[in-house]
Image (cartoon, rainbow, N blue to C red; front, side, top):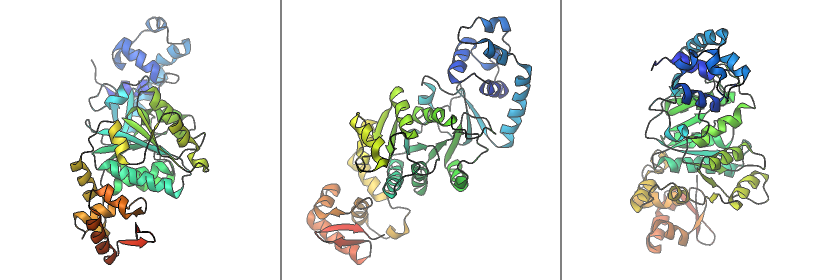
Length: 370
């Protein structure tokens, strides 16, 4: 078998030869070098190829352009990850239509566990906050968050996990030499430093509308499950959820205000059987990651490890403060979440009030001040 990236790049650049036909060609010829050298009469015998496909496969100009593509890939410091490579994500390799080549900036790790967090580009402040929080929490369990680097939920999912030093993968609907949306240049650089940006598209391919549904199958295909946080009735996030269902992945949805158009899609997903997310344990239970007391303790004590506001708190104070990071809680609920007695919770809350971390609302309800 010849290991030459030029043939893989050529295969991924062929007009009309998408992921399904590429997979069929590789099944028949074993590697792209043999496809490159296949004779016209041999290709004409394959029932899944049209006469136009055969013409493109033997086209000399298309073959010559592969070297130009390869030079452009190396010029942009892009790695070529083929479906035969050991680092190619296992779950993605086994979907119906895996890309034959992934173009990568950053690092893919063979043992990473991926969960996708996706949602509306026009999200509410609640949705953005929850995308950030859920991604932070997933990081505590060594999970790599996958998203699409779009405006709104996607960007906040990436930012959330990066804020606590976790890893994240952005799947783009364009070439990796293009920043889309263009305001995400710094975010893209951070993702590359702490994970990877990946695409099935060659450098120079613009972010065309038709690219994004195909991109979404990679987001779900690489992942153990997909979490949808806010989605309208026709949101692209619902396309990702549908891909996830077809691929046998878990689908999670964050419930939202029934009067909000941003929650129409997520509430419908729950109605149709998606797992409702009310806490990190809802996700971990479905993907069989242990949510033991020890892990819970590690999560609570690590949640604010990089936050200067909490650097001087002891374990009990951090554990109680972490309960309040998404919403105010009654003292009884804090006791239930932490497992601490009411007496201990009360005394710790007093100390947190004195330190300016929390404030008490009417009815023994407490909230973070920041």
